[in-house]
Image 1 (tube, rainbow, N blue to C red):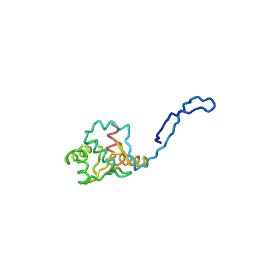
Image 2 (cartoon, rainbow, N blue to C red):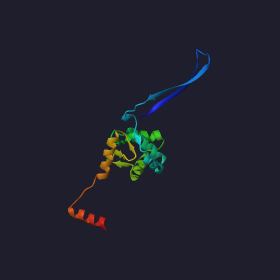
Image 3 (cartoon, rainbow, N blue to C red):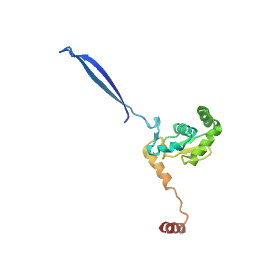
Image 4 (tube, rainbow, N blue to C red):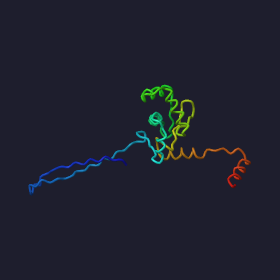
Length: 159
């Protein structure tokens, strides 16, 4: 759990000897954050930020702030895009380009025209158990059309 530590040095007079004594007083304050007060960046994935432009990184940060708890979904309607563009000091087209680039880099997935999902591999806002569920869903989605496809796939693996 995060904590704040405050140390203070005080001088007191020993009543028995009249000697000046120095004591350090330390206070520790524990802080508690609820899941809606922060989001997580996973350190093993931080190097992905080196591949991002300034606009992409700032946009992704803003999207994380706006993302829905335990889903990482973000509605990016025109008004939100305009506001973010103004706040970042860029044009509307720069936001559209950054969204496209983040999709190309597999950091964002476009769910529909205004709804995006941020990859839980990089950022997560919510419970860790829900992040694990989201990652598992990403990793196990597949479709088997017929038995012949399975047999052909198995043959390819065994070559």
